[in-house]
Amino acid sequence: MPGASSSASPRLVAVIYNPTKGDVKELRAAVEMGLAEARASLPNGTSGWEGVLWLETTVDDAGQGLSRRAIDAGAGLAIVAGGDGTVRAAAHGLRGSGVPLGIVPLGTGNLLARNLGLPLTDVRASVRVAMHGDDAKVDVGVAELTRENGASSDHVFLVMAGIGIDAAMIAKTNPQLKKRVGWLAYVDGGLRSLGTKRLHIHYQLPGHQKHSAHVSTILAGNCGVLPGAIELMPDAALDDGELDIALLQPRTVFGWLWIWRKVTWENHVLRRTSFGRKIIRFTGSDKARMLTYLRGASVQIEVEGEEPVELDGDGFGNVVGAHFWADAGALVVRVPPGS
Image 1 (spheres, one colour):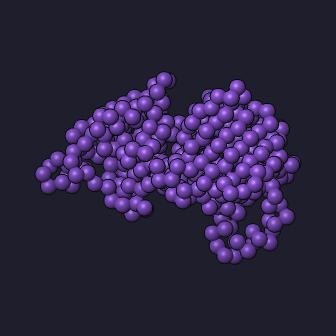
Image 2 (spheres, helix red, strand yellow):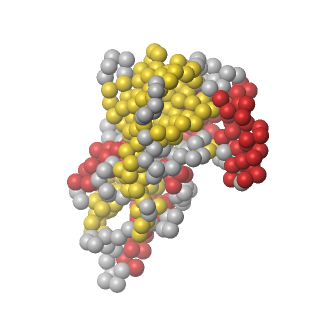
C-alpha cells in the first residue's frame, strides 16, 4: 500500500543514469531543483539528504551492480534515469533492499512508468515524484531461464516476459528505426515476425495439471499496459502477488486482427462500462480461444526446440524452458502522492 515517504536522518540520493538517454545536464538541474524544494520544505533549511551519488551505467553494468553500490554507500533513494533496460537492471539490484526506486523515464517504451502513472515526458516532474512522492511496494517478476545446454540463469522483469513471436519481433526490430520513431518501430518488427511458426509448449500453473498447446506466444505479465493504448492484460496488478498469463493462438491474419481489436478496443475502452462488457460477451465468445488468460503465482514452461525469450522488451537469447514467478512486494517504488 502507498504511504508518504520520509527520512528520519540525512542519507544519500543515488542517481543511476544511462548517458545515452536524455540530457544529463537537464537531469542534474532537475535533481538540484528537487533538493532545493526539499530544503524549502524543512524548517532548518536542510534538504534531508546529505548528498548526491552520481552513477553512470556502462556496457558492463547496466544498473544492477550500480544499485548495489548505492545501497552499500548508504543511499536512501535510488533515482534511475533511462529506458526499460536500465530500470529493470537497477530493480534487480534493489530487489528486497527496501530502498525506494524513483524512475525518470527516458526510453522508448517506459513500460513500468506507464503502468505506475508517472510523468513520461517531463524530467523535472519525474524527479519531483522520485524525491517527494509516496512509497508503494510492488511485485517483481523473476525469470529462471534454461538453455539448451542445461545452463540456467535468473533475471528480473517488471512488466512482461514472453516466449515466441513477441521475442522474435523484438529481435527483428531495427535499432536505428527505434531511435527515430520510438515504440512504433516494434510494429515493423512485428510485421516481419508474423510468419514465425507456432510453438508447441507445455505449461503448468501451481496446483494444476500440465497442459500442452500450440501458440504464437506465451506471456507472463506483472502488469498489462503497453504503449499505443494497448491493454494486453487488463486485470494484471503490480501488487497482487500473481502473474497474469496470456496464450496467443491465432491461426490466420484475421486472428491477429481480432487480438489487436481485443487489446486496444475491448480491453482499453469497452470493458470500462457495463454496457461495453455486455457487447464483449455478445461478440467475443466464439473467438475467445485465440487469446486465453490465466493467473497464478508462477508458471513453468517447456518448449520443443529452442525459442527466443524477452523480458520487458529486451531479448535474452533462446531457451528451452522458463520458470516465471512473482516475488511479492519485493520492490519499493516512488509514485505520485495520493495515487
